[in-house]
Length: 301
Image: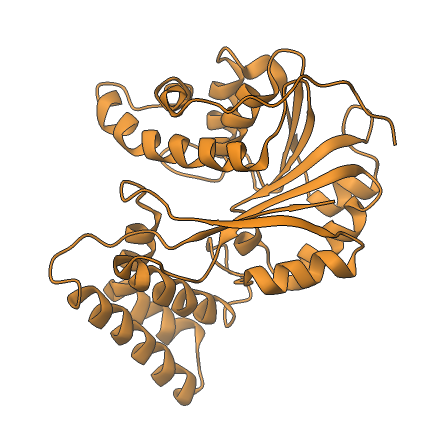
């Protein structure tokens, strides 16, 4: 595998989050409210990239880029001499209030857009067909995308296809632990959501393949990757992912989904009880805000 000469890693300042947040598409007349949501997302991803220590000049493959929330930070990290190949299988017409295509096009028009190449493709097919500018990268990033996969087999296939295409594998995913009591509802809600979606074969939910850090590590090792280092990050309380996921499980629509997708009465009962556990864990916070659970950050070689 060929490599490029990169300059030493320099941490990105958290103050860069305000700039990155403005790279993303925003509603006319309500940009400030949108920035308030995007800012903690950008700060969180700066922390991830700094933990990974991606140096300027790197060639990066990002699997599961979505609308580019992490892509923008990666583009800042690699600098003008680097490159980010961003791959996602989602339809360019998918998403609201902006589609995947609209969000990616908006980011392409930003100051870092020229460093990003978008690929609307199934990651495994992209890799096995020799996708990308030259088919090799310094690092491959899977940042908060594994739970979107349809099955554990999808992850295993992608990891196997990557084994001789990159020097380093970088992963960030929720840890299924809660250092903060206020993050317990997020853990419970994620498990309830994943269990429900396991009974919905047509699901497009954002939690379909709930794998723990241990399971991800085992899958990586089975494909020839060796764990180099790992850490647990505690998200800032401003990150809203935990609140969003908890709210979706607490909602009445979750009960409707159970009735639609689950026919076995014991499973229905289990899911309703799981929802009750989420509601109870939120009540135990006595009005405190639900936080986002711990995040596992790992580096494999």
